[in-house]
Image (cartoon, rainbow, N blue to C red):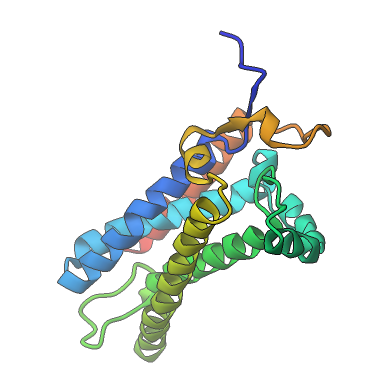
Length: 224
């Protein structure tokens, strides 16, 4: 079956799968912590550890739109991009827009901080703890727990901003961002006539990233 030349892949399925699994896991992690289902909270937390690790690795060896270096290069055009938004002359960006780059990095940073602090956290009674809490003192574990709670508030705020931005793009700027994150593709006509970077799924690096992420999670489990 030949690819449709009128459509182009923007987001590979690895990026999309990780994205939507994170969308599901964040509220589940909050709910299990609030309701005291700590066994499930730990299991889901370790799953999130694997997803965050995979996404960070994929940011270096993945498809073009998944990589961090092209994202960072977009920042230099931030002023002109914001100017185009003000006058409603913005064109769809192949991958993350200069403004979205900050959101992506902030969300990934907050998620990485959340899972890292959770691994070392100890509750006030010392009965519940992260799998790596054995490596730190009780006092340090409590500090990680406090950071874990504070950082979640930051993460929730960033998620709220992310949803708000998508809504603004959809209803105000008339740019559909949701569907490409589901299907992975957009119309080739949405982008300028200039040649776009090669953007394709890379199976061998993807497998390597998945294996390395899983190995790290299994290593953490050995401490639990």
